[in-house]
Image (cartoon, rainbow, N blue to C red):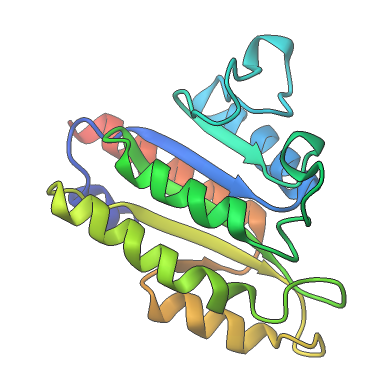
Length: 189
């Protein structure tokens, strides 16, 4: 997977963009990624110097907690209503430096009844935006849930895979794969 995805990236594509609905999963991703690639920027940074000056614009490697207060004031949480992530994936696709988009999907009562299905058309649109510009964006996700959840773990993973998303068994594994692709790209160019 690493070599296959690395070959699809052009020399300007070098950054990971994480669009998280879960703050804890976003924190985990930042901790793991920072060990591999250094500075990570976020609206919930690990270190003060990593705070994004504009939460609506990614900078270098950026992982965003879309469930944080600044995104949810007066609006439903993105685990329920994915609108903020749907819009953000399209803006990340327009950024020529975006190499990878990382996403979490959290299942269970209180979550959207079909989170993968809600994102599928936007994943397609993001891919088309990049392709129109001669680029490929690697999409990597994990689904946090079980087959006993109302959304069905297997069904959600299947929908993502049908859209070309690489689905890993855990957030940590998804993050490590993203780091490996970015590091491989650095070393091959």
